[in-house]
Picture 1: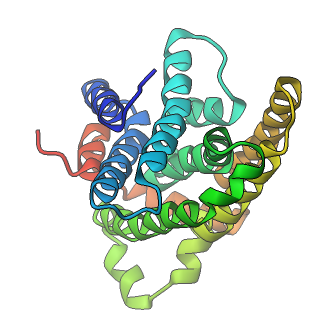
Picture 2: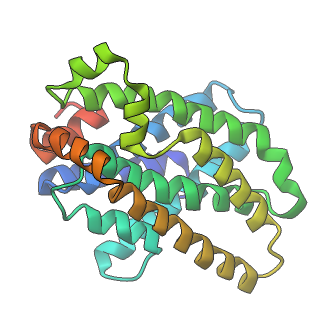
Length: 253
């Protein structure tokens, strides 16, 4: 259990290094998440948030939900079904890098983020974090543009996509909107903050996890047209798993 953002970064670095050594596709999300965490750490130091001390606490609580899921999966213990879907998907070669990332983002944003916000600001306190909650999501959205560039560099067909300016096609392929995910995560925060006891909290997490898992399955199994398009991209997605993890993490080895 990490207690500071620096400890979180150390843990994430260890996971990234492990996945690179093992050619494990779970490293795609870990590398992205490490980049996100380092960016948030820099913003906290710069005083970007309304309450930077509270935002470090949120970041740690948020990250620990991923780290706990990672540890449970590696130990063969149960974790949330949405995270289990993400980890199980890493065993398959068919999904694109993008879909591995989105499956992890689905579990972490659509389930974990709202819960973490409500843990840090329970009950009536939840509204006090709304502005910083939006700020952290703005950072995530900005990072998506950079991730798209990283993913494009893995696709020989990327220049054609760029010339066509096919933003709708990109979004259709992804099947995931950061704006929608942000709004849904805030609703999770409000609902979880309103839970008055441990049983109510656990029941809410269980039901929310089912919905997030169902959406994760939709991301992985879209309509036939999108499946055909992604199959073409996947065939031309060259490079080793380790190489892609390094590229996503922008880390020199």
